[in-house]
Length: 64
Length: 467
Image 1 (spheres, chains in turn yellow, blue):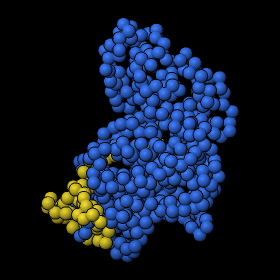
Image 2: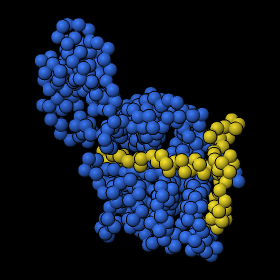
Image 3: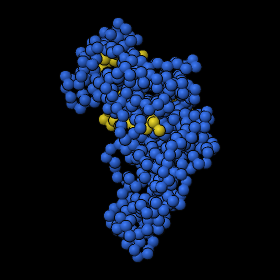
Image 4: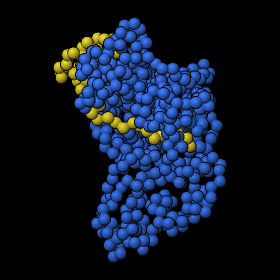
């Protein structure tokens, strides 16, 4: 899932779509990406986190 | 399409809590990707219809629409919406009209500038989605409350820029929204961060500028770690629960990592305060949290390769602070507070089976050695902030307020350990006894045995027997 392809760089499973327009993404949503593609893997990780949400990190006593 | 990536140097700088502006920009891009992918997955279920207004707005003003999509509360909405749709909710019931008006409502903006470093952060007190950060939001602020927030923010910014400028610079690259929340009766000041809302901090009205500065440092670290965790897993078993030095309830390993990371920058801030003016409270906080962060981070196990790199850098940052001099009286209180917390945590969260308690009592009565009994962790029903009368008294002493030495806790805090021992023995306060004597017996075992013996055993002798 994660790992260092080489010692100087850590490559995430999460795909960079920040340069794509929303219109492109919505259009592309008509097609389901194959499970073994990078996008398919990325979307599985994204939705997997929805199925196992962490609790909000709450409770810092900021005032002494 | 390329994956998001970080150089090894960027990951280790993040672990040390010292991200560069370029790294922060990459993390912000990754969070924009997250929001866009959530919207894509919503569209995969609903079809493109609900997105028409948003895509038209994007054609008209791409930059403004992109800024709207990147807002932390859009992350909250998109996460909720997609979760509901995947759970079988009808598109008519998931609030898709939120996408029809992608504009910001009018907001108060907190602004501050000190020594050439400026910051401007919207104060979000109206959007109903602000409740999604995990704490009950305060109602919309009136003029007087807004003025108090601005005054505290101005002074907090002065403190941050003066004492922790690199952290203040990083904060300008992370913090995009402050949500005022209701105070918690159990806490002096409370704050929260959601993994769905990068850059948003929910925080109760600060007691003073110092509390706001510490709260903002603490919470933006959570946001930063959430963004890193979006990219890389750090723990093989993030849900495994155990002791953390800052909460009275058992915490998952992911929460312990979060706490260590958040307290790292708060500890750095207290260190700077101590060096700046020698404030006793800052010295206490520095001495307490440097140890707590180091112990908690070192106790994390089953780290992924990225987690090992990140936590290693965190430890490299905090460990040199352990050798720095702190006034011995303050150090005693700080180290005592950490020991006390662990003892109280054990007593609160670990239980002894009745048969085991009976076996211990029987061994005591017969003069035998204690049998090899172990307590077990019980899940806590709800969040438990740290609450300790001894800690409150230590804070009073450090604020130069009167502490009554007649009670066991008062005597302990004032350093009269003989008087404290007498009082704790009389009260059968096993945490206090272990704290004063340094005996390493588990307080929950001592308390369970004492109860099984109907109080007939001397608490101090019982503790010695178990140690």
